Image 1 (cartoon, rainbow, N blue to C red):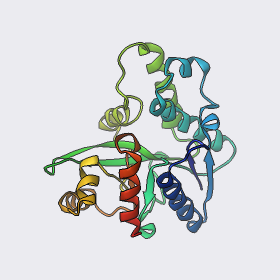
Image 2: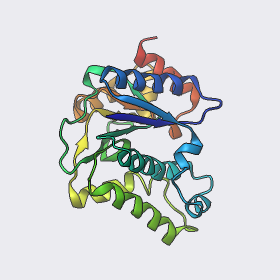
Image 3: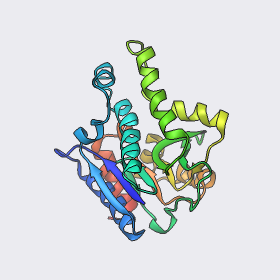
Image 4: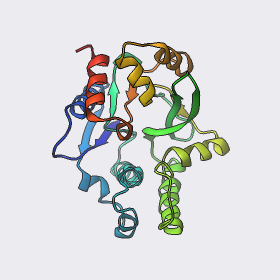
Length: 236
């Protein structure tokens, strides 16, 4: 198994360094290889046309970049490729488990999104992705991303179109395996936790089950809040 992540090499926020460090330590404890990639490496397998149409839309570029990396690593002979976003923090390594066997050879994260008031939305996220050789979905997913942008570039595209929105729709039709060990922290939940509250956290634990890592949703938090919640969750 190889665990991969990506983030730029310059001006890396402390909380990202700490989050990626927690993933690297978990991978090593599992006996897995660990590899991190810079921006250029993440985008190396993406066509200039795709990059040009999505100039500045980094999350959408990264949605395809992780798939291209997985394709390359599987072609190199790796038996399992695990992608984790750079803003994933492992908080309980013993609970950070992946299925020993995957139906179809691929899986994504189960999203349980808790908002202010305790309202829960369910979906699929790609902060964690697992791919094994010969799986039928990876090549299709990469092709679908390229096709969507070729057909619709220039229109107003939702930021999550190639990630959670696409995967939720596909899961509703195909019912593929989902991973529960990486939970999503909404800004409402983070801010309540930082203010000393725990009601939304309890809702997450009840609805999401046992998880060992959390996705901090970098695009929705400032660096200050993100560092604070990392310190709270790491107990320092």
